[in-house]
Amino acid sequence: RAKEGGRSTYAFFTRELDEQVARRMTVEGWLRRALDTGGVEVFFQPKISQPGNRIAGAEALVRLRHPDGALIPPAEFIPVAENTGLIMPLSALVLREACRCATAWRTGPHQDFVMAVNLSPRQFQQPGLADRIRAILQETATPPEALEFEITENLLLDNRPETLETLSELRRMGAGIALDDFGKEYSSLSYIKKLPVQAIKIDRSFIDGLPGDEDDASIVKSVLSLAQGLELRVVAEGVETRAQLDFLVGLGCSEFQGYLFSKPLPAVDMQTLLGQSDPFPLP
Ligand code: C2E
Ligand code: MG
Ligand code: MG
Ligand code: MG
Image (cartoon, rainbow, N blue to C red; front, side, top):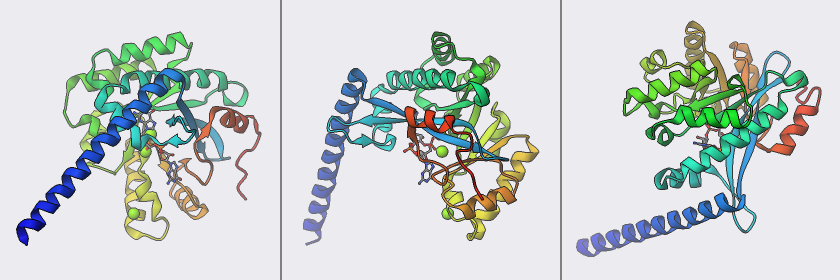
């Protein structure tokens, strides 16, 4: 009986594995096709800053358009892109589109609009990342100050000196660097000291429980005071309710991103939002 159970467990796992492999190959196929046929789309989620709930910028978030019209979220295809090397052309496409929009949108009241673009650790493993970025900025006539690159702590796990050099080079060019998903993984505080970052984004998992969850509240409070001490900006990610917003404002947090304000939008809708004089009037 035990043996039989063992065997069927084994069979179960191999079937799971087969399915995972098949799924990954399917997604890889979609991704290759999308890269060739314009099926990679970039959405934008506004970043709101207090006071006044102004749109200070947006985060570029990639989507894949399935041949049947459905949108595939990045969690499904970024890992595949990373494992197949397709992350390189994919990221170049996202950056180019983000730059194109940022330059178009930095007019009138939005001259200081900042576009956030996520960088994957894989992009740092090939030499010349800063040069590749610089080339796209030149091609799209985008000033580096218009960009803020979002990195995650796992970028620093393999401790390559080249990574820090690349980040410093991006800083010297004038682009911003933000530490994304702060608190989600290892969050060694020594990283922050080592890194040329100007902003941290508090992971949405800590915003979730606000204002009721006392653990989340005290974590958010300490992150805010840490950031204040280090003179870093703080962005709260995943703000979904008015109660969360009020609580964060009460603690002195002044930048927000979340469904309370807006979901990620196609470029045309983001542009419409930027055309409104007071897009987020909160009573
Ligand atoms: P991220 O960089 O932390 O992006 C924020 C994610 O939180 C986005 O998910 C966004 O839609 C979601 N979000 C924002 N506000 C709320 C909220 O109020 N509630 C909830 N439940 N979710 C909210 P998305 O677009 O699915 O992206 C997931 C992750 O995929 C991103 O997390 C980022 O790590 C990665 N990603 C997205 N675009 C790119 C890209 O162009 N390049 C790379 N390397 N990674 C990307
Ligand atoms: Mg991000
Ligand atoms: Mg994040
Ligand atoms: Mg929680």
